[in-house]
Amino acid sequence: MNIVILQQAFEELKDAIAYYEEQQSGLGLKFKEEADQHINWILSNPTVSRLRKRSYHRVNLKVFPYYIAYMIRGETLWILAIAHGHRKPEYWINRE
Image (spheres, one colour):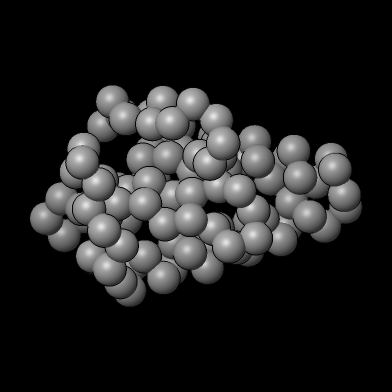
């Protein structure tokens, strides 16, 4: 399966890493590692998480209050957002 990370999602990832690194040295790296682990899990199990109303899947990170929103189109997995779970729900929903 191919993977495409939208530029906005990549920027969200970078911003979250920077934020956590500012809070405590090494915390940004822990966030990145957790996000990477979840993305790898998604690649291996793309249809395990339930399909949401607007045809996307969502996987919550376990340690940090973020989730990864993605869609599957053919053989491509599209990462739409790496979003904070307590801010504006589905603000990213019109991304493609």
